Length: 584
Image (cartoon, rainbow, N blue to C red; front, side, top):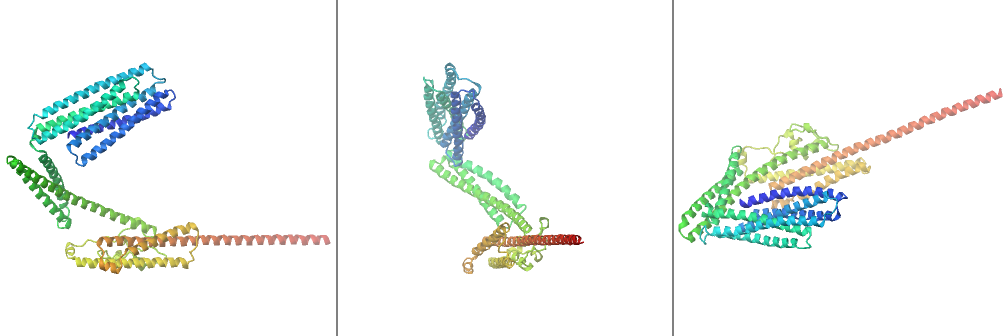
């Protein structure tokens, strides 16, 4: 809990640092776009911003590494080291962000460089604050030594919990001592002559990190001291770990039992999944009872010697591991069933939508008419009602819809029909194999019907002299032809030969996969047929337009010829009249 609180507090501090860094970036863009700020101040602000971004990235990596370490089951020592490193990185990121904000603010506000005296004064102010923080870190370091002395007085030297707590506090103290040593060196370098603003910023960041690590390590040491000296000190680490896992497993089992009760209220309690759940829950309850008995045995063995206690603790640990395994098995069964139900519902919805869309595109019923009682057949140019019914034949194996639905949406989807419980109980493995064999034969027959229908469409195109056509008509038709041909070839290659089927009969999953692919191949053949019919109608329309244009040209030429004849006759009459007038 102490580690979790420190991690959450550090993560909240990192979020604030990221928000402040976004504001600093905006201020930096404004300062850089202005021409009044001096170049050296702009360069200093740029360096501070880059350092803040780098420290923020390191802090994010530290958070990710700590979470991964904790989730993988790290020890207390590793958790202490991880939380100390995490707090140090985030503190450095926050300090560098504040420094960048101050530097960028100066770059935006000032229009002339700072004087040397002003720079020195600001450095001294920062160094004074840093020295105070370093003194605080040193005080924390001395408090660690006192915490170790306090831990030594709780129990005798053979107490394993006290020894572990001392090791953890010693590790935290050593980490803090290293950071204080580095911070002191950087502070001396920043106080020397010739130091730059970057040296001062590095010293301030190091001291801030040491101060944060000191406070974090002190809090961890205090919490460990309370655990060793309080009630938890009565349990050895092995027993405390086993008891903690046992209590968590009991809480999880209570939640799974509630799910099992809710499921039993609305489901058949004699199906296979229900029986598996009952068996798994019984095994989990039995494992919990054995673990409770082993825990009581550990308490009774407290005064029997170290050997008996160690044997009882090992037995408790093994039984708790069995409890965790059994509870996880119950949870996994429930999760798998819920996932299967969701997948089944989604598959049924997707199948219905796909069938409606495909039938709409190939001349079938519209969406509002796509219901189980729709009995009208799709319109096909070169097919027949019997051929279409063969392609969507629903009488395949375990699926038995009504005969009048042979060309409906339900038939194309081949949705299952639920049978009575007695019929399911009479369904032996031999009958199931025979039913799957009939289903495979039906699938193969449907594939042959689809192939024959595909060849008839191609022959009809050749007979109609549709082998050459404009690209805007030929490209879509060629695409549909290739899709249908490839789908039928793939299905034909996927189906096993009679020899393979005799050696390894197809399973239910394989039959479902074959049926889906055969259905999709039939749909693509229908789409190819619809595209061919649309292309044929479009070619007829183009030919009709060409004939109309030719007829219009002929009519125009005939009218022009008649007009020229009339003009010639009129000129000839005028010439005859002029000749007669000249003679008279």
